[in-house]
Length: 499
Image (tube, rainbow, N blue to C red):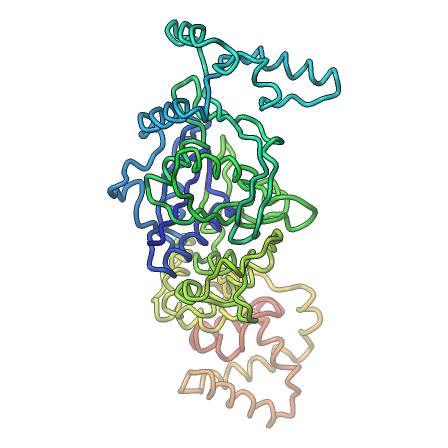
């Protein structure tokens, strides 16, 4: 059975790179009828941030990619926080020592710092490995009696993996064969003096005990693959299949996308709003993006279905997703492209749904109006909108009469006979019994033709009267929505200003 996991650390807001990793795990699991787990990797308690774990859960739920098993959805493999599993890891660390695959290291931070300085002075780089381990304070260089004495008196120690000396061949589902000479690697710490495992040990033990079949994670973990494969071998366990996803790159320049790029260029990099210190950081939700648009956008960052199709429902993504079509190269984040996706999803939503969202903005502005009327307005203006928040800028004139008029447009459009023309138009409007867009347009245009006016003499000043500037939807649609009385009042208002 396919079982995958998303295993973030609660050290702050969930970056969209993490969301993309969670999404790809989710799509893969659902494609094969498998399970998607959430595990919180909080072994480094010094970096733990209050509220980050709940943020991760809320972010996944908002994106529409909820986990099947994990924190708050306890299954047979609970608990799912590594800090609550620490008793488990010591047993496995001890097992590696008994098998000769790991060893105690008693070197102090000062000892190791001195070693680094000594190597640097000789123009070399210090690595704790096969070349240096016997010159350092560990259970490989000390006698059994010395090791026992140190352990009995409570000397601080870490447990290090004894890296073998070989050329290791591995397979990655995205990158193919990966070959590494393990002589170039260090003896990683597996268990720390504070009684907590490092990521490497906890990760391997948990993936094995939780029966994870595929590990789909970011490219930054590719250098850890040899150690993880060797740990599986050391325990005598079958390793899961690995797939390392490409990085999400900056919109400009080189390197991985960071929150600083978002701050600098004015776009979010987190799914939900987050406060870091005293600094509030907007997320995609807070900026008005739809979760479906974000998911669709992220799915195509590093993967494509092999066609030109760009808009996908979640079910379509599940059906089409294939790790073989994930790219090796990094995918550049395009802030304008995700806006395009949001625009597409906004157009697909019903007028009623959008009206409900827009009504919340109107209430904040102290405007109470019937939902069916808001629905009509939304229908007229949504084509130009990217976000629901754009509706006010696009259609504020439906809710409030102009208080000022565009000065440049007024000078250009207001002629000596404009007031008289608008008086005549007002009379036509007053006499039109069916006050809807089509008959209104027909009546006014017939009048223009009969009087021999040009449309330029009538329509621009009429728009100025209703909107206050030269923008807006079809002018007769505006009249229908605001009604006869309001239309006539606005015409009178502009005439009074211009004498």
